[in-house]
Image (cartoon, rainbow, N blue to C red; front, side, top):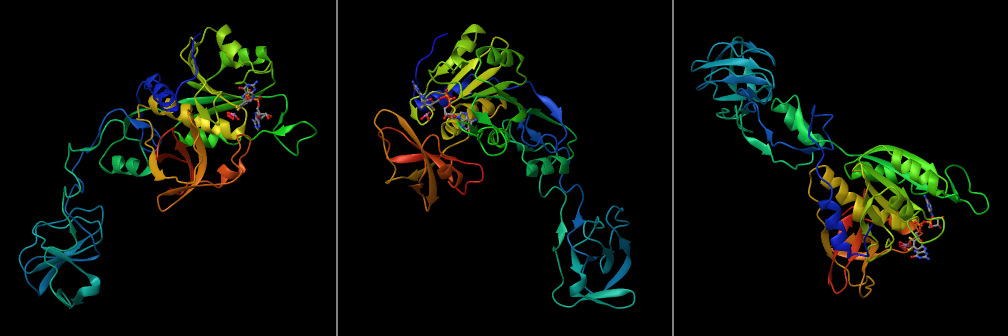
Length: 385
Ligand SMILES: Nc1nc2c(c(=O)[nH]1)N[C@H]1C(S)=C(S)[C@@H](COP(=O)(O)OP(=O)(O)OC[C@H]3O[C@@H](n4cnc5c(N)ncnc54)[C@H](O)[C@@H]3O)O[C@H]1N2
Ligand code: MOO
C-alpha cells in the first residue's frame, strides 16, 4: 500500500476518477428515479401526439353562430372534420376535429338549442394543444449523465418510454466500529450514542446511492477484516477506525486484505484522517473518522464523488459565496458549517469536529481553501442554498 495526505480538491477529483460507472440496467421510469441516464432520453412520440383541447367547451371552425355536431370525450376519436360554421362539444384532453380553429370554453359560450355563439371575442387559435408542440418524435430530451428525477421519469413516460437505460444506484454498506457505541436509549458511563448510523442512510440516498445495510462492530481487527471481506455492495463506509490508536484497525485490515490505498489522509480540517481504498474484488472502501462532523465532511469529500462516478455522473457542482467572517488556516482546506444569506456565508456556532449542533442548523459546508477569497459551498441535505 502507498498513500499520503492529499489536497482536498485533489482527493475529491481522485475519488470521482477511480469510480467507474456501473454497468447499465433497464428500469421502468419510476424505478429509475435516482439513477443516471446511460442513454439519452428520446421522445418516442410527438407530444402531444394529437391536437387536443385544453378546455372543456366547444371546438369551433369559422365564425359564429356554430351548429353543434356531436361531442368528443377524452380517450375517444375526434369524429369527422368540422366545416366552417360548425362546432363539436369537447372535454379537456379530448382530440379536436380536423379544421378546428379554437376551443370556446363553456364559460364564454352562449348555448342555444343546436348552436352556440361566443359571449365575447371568438377563440380563434386558442385553447388547442397542437400535436408536437412540446416535442417531436426522435427528439433528444435529456443527455447521457442526467440524473433521473421524479419529473424526468414523468416526462420519459409521457413520451412513451417503458424502460430507461440507466447506471443503477450503487449499493452502499456501512460498518460502524466502536466498543463505546450504543444505538438506543441513554448512554451509560463511558458510552456514546451512535450518531453516524442515523445519518448515513439519508446521506447515501441523497448522494444517489442505495443503502445496503449497516453493521455495528466492536473494536476488533478480526471482526472488521471479516466484515470487509463479506461486505455487500459496491461501496463500504467504515466509521471510527481511521486514526492511529491501537483500536483503529482500518489501515492494517486493508493492508492484510491486499487493498490498494488510494487516499490516506486529506489536508483538511476537520476530517483529515479519512481514506479511500479499493479491495481486490473492486469494492471501494471509504474510511470515515469517528467524530461525527468529521465523518460528514469525509462523506462529502470522498463518498459523494465516488457515488457520482459509479452513477456515471459528474461530481456535484459547488456553489460560491463571500465569507469574510470565516476563519482561514494556512496550508489546509477548512470545512465550516455555514448559513447562507444573500450570497454571504456566515459561520454558525458549535462546529467542533465532535459536534453536530452547528451543522444540524446549517445550509451548507463552506470550503475555505488556503488563499481563496471567495468560498465554495457544498449544499447540505435540506439546506436552503
Ligand atoms: N494520535 C492521534 N489521535 C487522533 C488523531 C491523530 O491524527 N493522531 N486524529 C484525531 C482526529 S482528527 C479524529 S477525527 C479522530 C478519528 O478517530 P477514529 O476514526 O479512529 O475514531 P474513534 O477514535 O473511534 O472515535 C473518535 C471519536 O468519535 C466518537 N465516535 C466514533 N464513532 C461514533 C459514532 N458512530 N457516533 C458518535 N460518535 C462516534 C468516539 O466515541 C470518539 O469520541 O481521531 C483523533 N485522534
Ligand atoms: O477529523 Mo478530526 O477531523 O478533526 O475530528
